[in-house]
Image 1: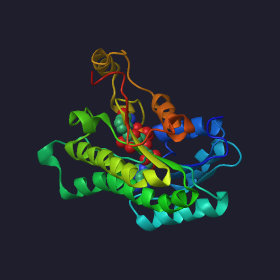
Image 2: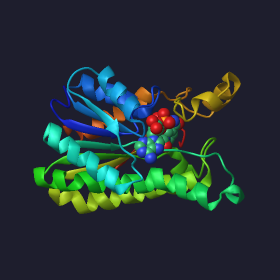
Image 3: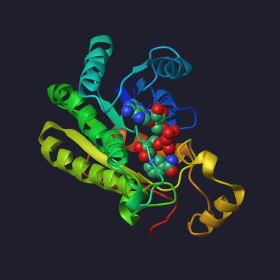
Length: 248
Ligand code: NAD
């Protein structure tokens, strides 16, 4: 029970096959009291109900600062504390550099980067008061290698921004014993990627991955569990690659 009674907020965790949902399941198996927030209230509630008793699910748009502040206030009101935040909500768009319009740029930067800032700002006062907390930020291999199959340059920029933001938060929040770390997943089979991957493409991609397969959401959830729990109590400002060795 690595997260016994810890209150864990996971953004963008309603999607059935997503990384956030897999993380929610794993956290609940380890005793965590999980709060699933996502755009759709009904889906977030249903996802939380799937985990069993004692978990919460409700709507929160991470691009809206007030929505994030309301979410944190509700969690403290109902569950009394906030121990873990996983900034998982994200969107991508497979665009080339000259095709990116202002709206595309805003949308991708807003969810991935601004959302990470707003949701972190919403929980930090509570974590500071507790003098403990762990924030996990979902970046991407796209930040490290400049794009991928599904992410455009604006997605790479947003996820690169997440790495910088997470390190800066780690530096500032260290004295409060609030840790901040990032995960850079490689190609993980979820709704973001799933529908677009033919079997031939999967075989082709796997050839470039030393571990010889694409990732699954549980691979990333396991890294989230490590960073959320006290197993990583002396780790902050770190980046964990979960990519099967794609960058070697
Ligand atoms: P997913 O589409 O299954 O999940 C993303 C979730 O974010 C969805 O439930 C969606 O409703 C939610 N969301 C979107 N906008 C939101 C908003 N404004 N407020 C709150 N929630 C919002 O995708 P996934 O593959 O599980 O991705 C999870 C995270 O992992 C994302 O940050 C993604 O960029 C990152 N990532 C994924 C991969 C991959 O290969 N799947 C690789 C690297 C990084």
